[in-house]
Length: 357
Image 1 (spheres, helix red, strand yellow):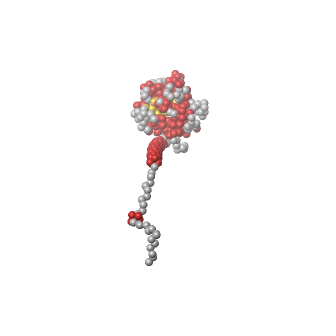
Image 2 (cartoon, helix red, strand yellow):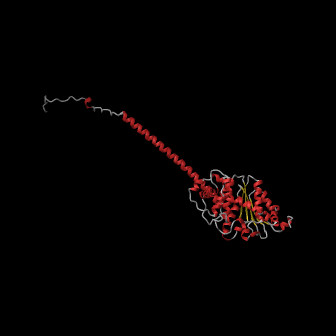
Image 3 (cartoon, one colour):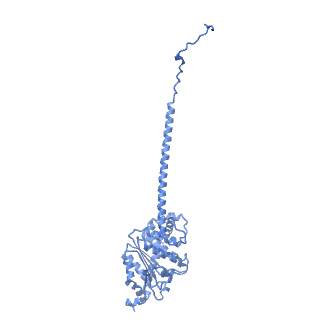
């Protein structure tokens, strides 16, 4: 057994000595915590702002999608309704608005409609109407009476008095009338136009005299030549009389290099303009001498125009009444474009029935 060394101190260990000593607590800088919390608050605020912006973008995207869907639906309905020509690509609504702006900028300047300020490019319609009326004294009274007999026909009275949209084509059969620039049928159309403007001031009355324009294609010399010139003129008259021209963004047109519209685009534009009218509007379209555009290179375009006219009288609103005249006899091509009930045929015997010898 080893001997104890009295010189060596043996520590007196107790249970308390064997307990681990407590660690000192972590001292946190209060300023640091304050800055840290502020940073978290700002980050959270930023996240909320970004989230709000994202929600706004989503809502805007949904609204744009709905608007685009509505435009596409409207365009689809327009294309389904207006099946004028399958030979050319369909016209989108923005292009129709471009053509409206093109026509509007051609005939209108300023921010409000001012008839006195309208340039001659629109005044052609009024000028031609006056010019036709001055020819009345130079026409054969028998021819005048022959055409005026139309007023006594049941079909004309059905057209003028009926509540629905309708169209008739009058085959006047005036001797030598097919060669006249202004015939007795032209005078009848001009007189009817003036009467409608007087009796129905709330109606929209547009007119066109085909005989006043050359048959040779020369757009610079005569911008109203041919079926496309006719639709261009009718569309302009609708724009001015309806006041739609005052709502066009003409500034946009001035900054855009628009292409000259074709016949289908012009027909689309006339249809679009008429569809913007109040549903209770009465529209009269009077075209004299339609047969002048029924041959040669005008024939195909005229067929598209006549398809549009048939479409217009099929719509419920606004009401559209169309009267077309042929000073001589209808060609087989023209007769094929109408049903029998739409053709009213006159003859020289009508002048005798009216008491003119």
